[in-house]
Image (cartoon, rainbow, N blue to C red; front, side, top):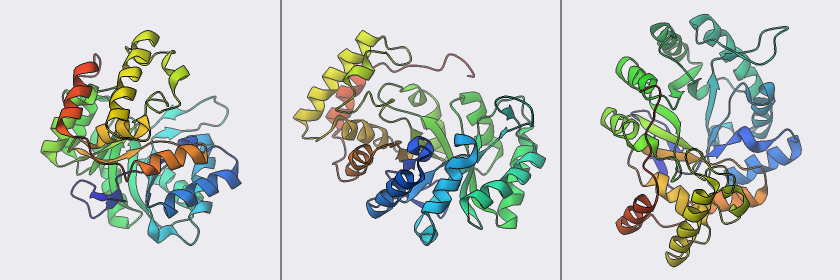
Length: 304
């Protein structure tokens, strides 16, 4: 599995990572999926403290017993549970971040987190204070590097200007090309890497995603999504890709700002398809151009 450097950091991440959110709460199955991923060269794992109320971090921690040194481990912070309240409260304060990291470290059964990410963010946040929290955690050795997870161009721009973040996690796929307008060029210029989530667009961009396309996706109606999927299938087959997911993942990886993609997997079959994309060839320039010609460019209408 090819590895890419994450921003200016010393972290070398597998170009195919594992988004752990969809692992589920069946510990035996989830651990098996993580181990299978590691055995196939996927060594970048991404979780978050809010996934299954912390259970996801606990399961990942169990799966990494004896294998922690083989992994680049990422998790996220910023959503706080308040006693007696439903849901989560957004809290990017320094005090909360420095408290929450201790709980994540405990659940993950590790002494350090390779990449700690702010799980959201707005311009109303105390941005300088948030950055200060991450910088202090770096100096203390609790984390190695930090980044943000956001689809908001104005927030990404602010952190790119004020912080030493090494990455931005953002949704990016053939069906969501919005980052190409401003976010990807900005981050490429700053030397900040993109972690692309959702590269197969909720399974639409896989060989088994026919029924899912009919529900539509973002500004694609069901008919539009199904039609585009059909065209992409033909392009995929003519190019020798064994699954549409490989074409979709290779599209995201073709952008120089993208260091890794993190498709999720809740079954062994899904995981194997994702892992096999690591052996698929890169897109030819004419294929990349053809995909852009038949899909919508898209722009962010909010948070510009």
